[in-house]
Amino acid sequence: MTIEARQIEKSTAAPGANKPGPPTTKSPQKPKLAALTEPAQITHEAKPADEDSIRHGAYLRWEAAGRPDGDGLCFWLDSEQELQR
Image 1 (cartoon, rainbow, N blue to C red):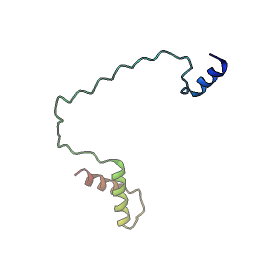
Image 2 (image 1 turned 90 degrees about the vertical axis):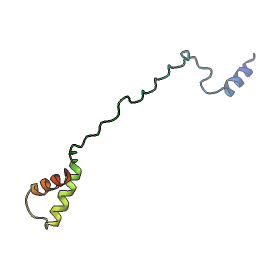
Image 3 (image 1 turned 45 degrees about the vertical axis):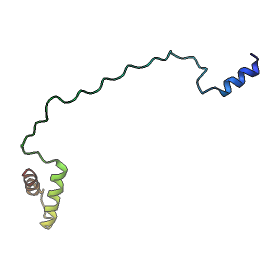
Image 4 (image 1 turned 180 degrees about the horizontal axis):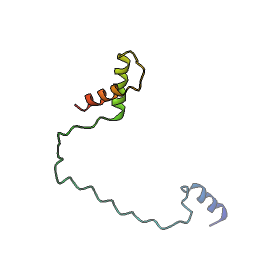
């Protein structure tokens, strides 16, 4: 094969086709997840309210009360209690 033929072959080959590298092997397939063997248990426990929901409720109560001075703990506790019902 002439030098010109090699250059043409290299330019038309797929990128990285002529580069040496590690031998390619197929990776083993990942095992599929097993189906659940037990049904989910449903509990009727009170779900704790998340902090953002409590904060939003407390803010609305504070605004409705005319934005009084103070730390607003009573608004926080009222909001928390309502969300836990």
